[in-house]
Length: 78
Image 1 (cartoon, rainbow, N blue to C red):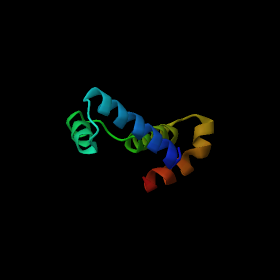
Image 2 (image 1 turned 90 degrees about the horizontal axis):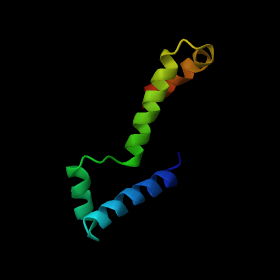
Image 3 (image 1 turned 135 degrees about the vertical axis):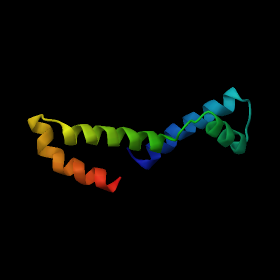
Image 4 (image 1 turned 45 degrees about the vertical axis):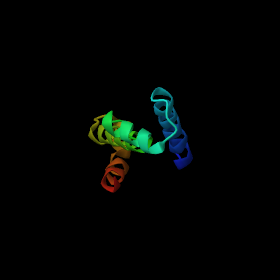
């Protein structure tokens, strides 16, 4: 995903917390995100990408084996 897409998702998360806690303060939202252990869209994307690449790398499927070397390279950069 592009950075702008992650920014849009983070905006939705922040807006939701603003509405739930009836605040306009980003500091309050940041504290709430920390208290409720809500991680950013970028972190979620990185975790899902890592999980996918590990599955591709460890798969016995012929197509996945074709891309296993690329998946391993990508995992090394994360």
